[in-house]
Image 1 (cartoon, rainbow, N blue to C red):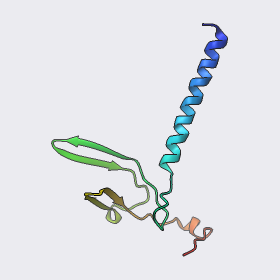
Image 2: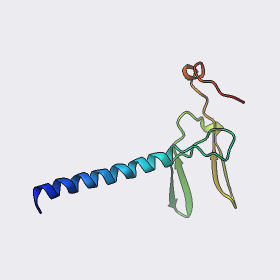
Image 3: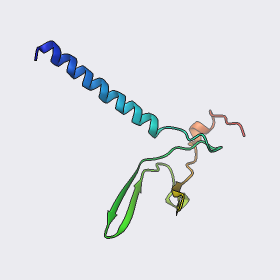
Image 4: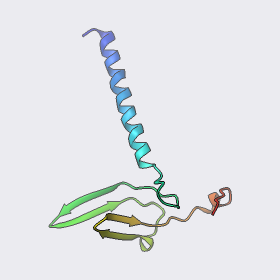
Amino acid sequence: MRSDDSVLWVWAEALQLLRGVEQRQRQFFAVVSSRSLPCWEPPVDAYEHDGELQLLSALPGVMASQVEVVFDQDGLLIRGQRPMPRLLASCCHSSP
């Protein structure tokens, strides 16, 4: 393989990796439009241990007492509400 070919191959691989990262980022931060309130879907890790299913989800800024978990025939719903930081609340406006 010529050195020019290896350089092009490296750049092609890097570009493909960047496209994959961008796609995952868009999926992670996608706003679900079927609801009236803004929401996002956090990553959830699922582990099976001793016949139990354990879930680990990152919900920064949400107090554990404010988390609701529902598992039914429709699937799994993890819901919580994160208050907007005071610094941001004064500069953001929302319409009802």
